[in-house]
Image 1: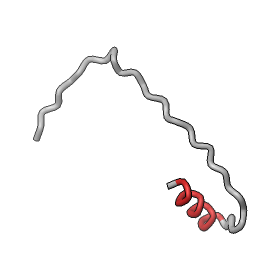
Image 2: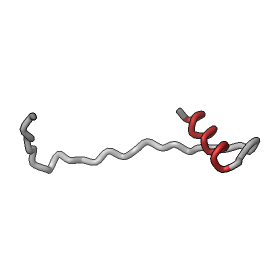
Image 3: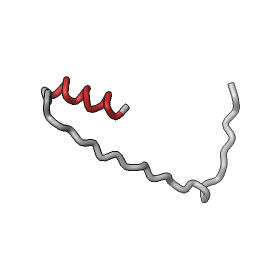
Image 4: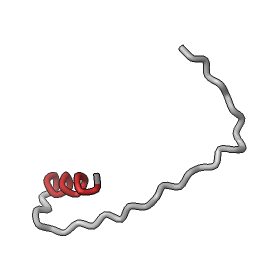
Length: 43
């Protein structure tokens, strides 16, 4: 997927031959443990 993104950026913005580095970082998970649980009805 990373290679796909880089190739799309090169094609879209004309970065042909330009080295591109992506710094991917892990997303932070939010802690929802203090929220009440609400059950939605299934349709």
